[in-house]
Amino acid sequence: MFVDSHCHLDHLDLEPYNNNLDLALDAARERGVKGFLLIGIDFNKFPQLIEIESKYSDVWLSIGCHPLGNETHIDKDLLTKLASNAKVVALGETGLDYHYAAEKKEFQKTAFEAHMQVASDLQKPVIIHTRSAVQDTLDLMREYQDKVVGVLHCFTEDWQMAKTAIDMGYYVSLSGIVTFKNADALREVAKKIPAERLLIETDSPWLAPVPYRGKQNEPKYLPEVAKCVAELRDTTPEKIGETTTENFYRLFQPSC
Ligand SMILES: [Zn+2]
Image (cartoon, rainbow, N blue to C red):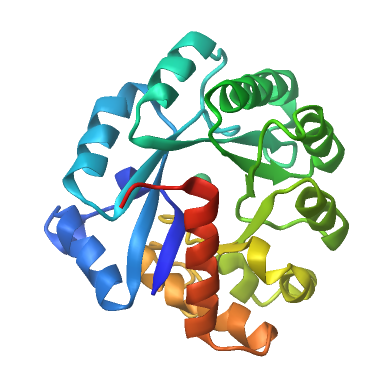
């Protein structure tokens, strides 16, 4: 079995499923994907996100403010209130993206720090998006070392960054990007991540893995990520599923 540690279920185009999320989840379950972490990135949608989480015993929820979102202000009190909900297992996604939004650097840093503070206060893990912002991301993680752990999701940086994060207690999550033709450097990183710190995800609806590139990504494509990672690590997709599921439960401690 597999757990999709990062999917934006509320952003899926459900038209192929007659606008029924049940059917999209069933398609994934049929392929062995038995758990879904719904990444909430819109505070206004929180009631709707809670409703989805409540409907399915295999869907869990996080809440945060995405570094590439439209927000220009972070309401830390509201974040604390939403993240305190027992159904929320993690903060995020949050983080820094200087590749796509360098002009929002200062806001991203303020928002990221707010998530770290709340994660520390509530003792919940944090889900970090990082792109072309290695030093600033690691600096903030280091400030909260021993108070906050979490995952570098949809990882695309180098081994040095992965190793530094792992040494601080973090997990590293691989998405469909690892299957992309030009991702040789990332495939080298994928070979080195210690098994007990590895997670997998789709980041759906974005970044569909090979051979579905260009299509909407969905949790049902998670086995393609597992298959690719398994080949790189000389093991089986089943074993990758087993290990990453165990890791998921250890990090997020979702109720069953
Ligand atoms: Zn995401």
